[in-house]
Structure formats: structure tokens, C-alpha cells
Length: 513
Image 1 (cartoon, rainbow, N blue to C red):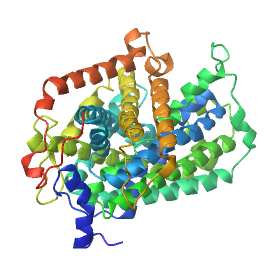
Image 2 (image 1 turned 180 degrees about the vertical axis):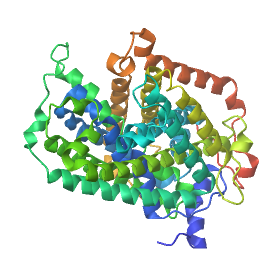
Image 3 (image 1 turned 60 degrees about the horizontal axis):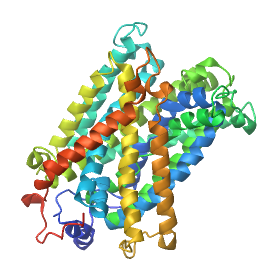
Image 4 (image 1 turned 90 degrees about the horizontal axis):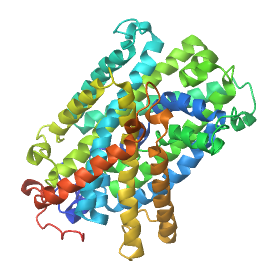
């Protein structure tokens, strides 16, 4: 597919921008595969499964696998709602702009604020995966100490993560075309490696599928039995299957985004579900010893090395490194587009600078640098306070689920009022729109509560027990949400409005609040 669209096609692609009151500024160079790659690299099958497999097994046993299809079904409901929105409003900062159009400026600002905060912490969490993988490939990558010291691993994780953030910052600053090429190449490698891993694990199966009914008696001592253990283990799946909206967040830089963005969202989510589910399933069926303690410590890295041998295993781990790299790149990219979209509406400090598009690279450069600097600053917390960092990481994912809920809930309200109309000639749920939307809202609320539940194993796993860590999700999100909303209501709402240099000739009416 050609990178550049014809003039008439570009004009049609810009119509949703004009409807929202913006003039086109970003360069449309992304084709169908580029948008698909953006969505699937954010989800990142290999990054998520290799980073969180150990958590699922240790808290839910092999039966934790069933959380994967359950989370997929719930997220599919959200993704289907997003597909309708992506067809109608394929714009930068998708979640922010969708929440603004559906729920009004205050809802949009709150959703964007929570999503932007969460994205910066998520970027930090992703780059920490380098430490989980690179030192297992070679001890040469343990630059700080020998890995046995109390802070060796944490300090080395900060070093490796900082290098990766510097890389994603530079690539994003040089324009979306370079980012898309690197990201697409990385996704091709990741998909080939993931399919190859499925085949290799399938060739080493040592037990039947009944293994995924094994619970190891976990949760037997609790009042909720295995259900409580399973809900905890399900976080390993919930922490992976999100970020598919990135395909639409690049809508202002995509060719025919109204058609391609919904397809990219669904393809990214479905591909991640199928391949990731097979990897987890076959790993449980192929590992030599299903009760090996290493399974709950080293996770998939242990399975790959013990099952496939060191040579093939290390090759797979190198592919995981590639997956982590493009995942970080996609997360950083999504954060930049969100910051640009909010700044364009004068909804961030120094908005005129953050919304400035480089005339040479046709991309917002300053947001790339700011997000990179903030992510590194958050990363440094990991050196001496890893427990606090794990709390922040969990909270960031909850905030993304809540930001999604700030889209699906107002969308449901609009449906019930008869005000929602899908884009003509593009993706539409038709008569299934209302039940799908209801399920998306119920799912988003239930999973947000499950993610935030004050579990010691999630929010206070090591060291002395502190109530403020266990209740950290409610406290932190309460402060961020209430403080952010108060700031918007008292200060920001008086400034909100499209910057003159970014506005269309005739701005649209302000959405009802």
C-alpha cells in the first residue's frame, strides 16, 4: 500500500478533524499494517506473557490460563465500542477526544489526565522488562555489580531502562515514518518468533490439556476459596490485554483511518489473544516439571530455556528483547499523541509549546522529550523503593481501565438518549451496539475493582505491611482523580479551547456538559 494518499483521499481523511474543530497538521504516511503494528506492539504478546506468566502461575496455578479468554471477552466488548468511535473520530489522543465528545470537556480532561499519567508509568514498567530478559541471555548485561547485591538488579534495571527510553525518545522525535518502520519491523520479528515459539512448544508437549485444570490447592485457606486466588492470578492477563486503542490514536497520521483503525484494533486484540493464549497453554503442557519452583519465579524464561535448550531458548529471548523495544516505542508514541491532543485544546501547561509540530519532521517533538524525562525520573524510584514502584505500576494499569470506562460509560448514556450515531459507511455494531456497550461498562467497572482490590500480594508483597500500600490504588487514584478534576474545574476549564494555530476555519459547537 502506498505511503502517501491521493489529495482527494487525504481531504476525506481530514473531515473528522474539521468536525472536531482542528486543522490537519500531522503527516499522513501510515498504511494498514502500520496501524495494526501500533496496536499489537502496545499489547506486545511476548513482553506481557514473559513478564507476567510467573505471577499467574504462582497465584492461580496452571488453571490461571482460563483468565486469558475471560479477559479477552471483556476487552473485546470495549474494543468493539472503540471501533465505532475510531470509525467516526480517528484522531490523536483517541481516548481523550472520545471522552470529550461523549461526556463533555470535563470528562475528556479527566480521562486524558488519567491516561497520560498512566502512560508515563506504563512506559517505565515496560522498559523494566529488559532486566528480566537481558541478564538471562548473558551476564554481560548485568552492568551493575554481579546481580547478587541487594540493589544490583534494581540499579541495572534503571540503567537498561534509561537507555531504552532514550532510544524511543530519539526515534519519536525524528518523525512517525521512522517510528512506523522500526515498529513494523519489530512486530514482524515478534509475530514470527511468537508463532515459532508456539510450534516449538507444541513439539515438546509432555502432558495433556487437563493440566490447565490444576489449581495446586491455592486459595484453600481463604474465605473465597479458589475464586479469590483466580481473581488475583487474572491480573496477569488483565495487565497485558490493553492499549489496542493506539491504532486509532495515530489516526491523524494514517491513510483512510476511518476504515483501517477499527480493523487494526480488532486484529491486534484477536491476534494477541490467539497467539498469547497458545503460548501460555503450550508452555504449561511442555515444561518438564509443572511443579518446578522456578516456574513461579522465572516464568516463561525458565520454560523456554529448560524445554528448548540454551541455543534456541536464547534466540527466543532475543526476540523478546525486540518485542520489549517496540512495545516501549508504541507506548511512548501513544503518550506523545495524547499529550499533543490535550495541549492542542490548551489542556496542559505550556500548551503552545507542547502542541507545536516540528516543520521538518511533522511530529510533536517536545512531548516526546518531556514524557521520556518523566519516565526516567519515575524509573529511578525503582532503585531503593521497588515496592512503591510495583504499586504505581499496578495503579497505572487501573487508571487506563478507568480511562476506558470514561469512554464506554458516556457512550452508553448517549445510546440510551438516542444521540449516538456511528459513522455512515464504516464500522457499526448495529442492533448489537447497546448490549455490547452495557457489557463493556460492566466489565470495565468489575475489572477496575478487581485490579484495585487491596491485596497484600499485589500492593505489599515484601517487607513490613503498610495500610497505605495495600490501599494505594484507592488512595492514589482518588488523589489523582479528585485533584485533577478540582484543578480542571477551578483553573483549566477557564482556559480550555483550541489553540488559534491549530483550529479549523469554523470551530464546531462545544459538546454538552
